[in-house]
Image (cartoon, rainbow, N blue to C red; front, side):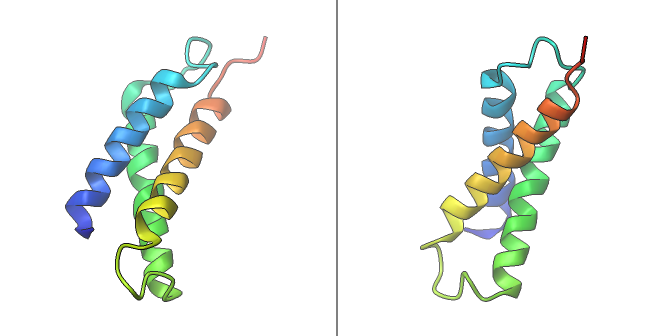
Length: 85
């Protein structure tokens, strides 16, 4: 999947995570924050997978692991930035 694929995956998951998160309306998180978190989560997952040689055989585990990491990162950022009343 290369770095352009990681960026596209992070943007798509960040957008979907922001749009579908239940605390989106109560959150101070803007759209760009969720997209940035998704891209960073996917990039960190790819780098960690390459360092640990988890992705040694190509794209078998790379897509699902990077997608899950991007989703967790976007949801966590939106949840942490939600207002407590």
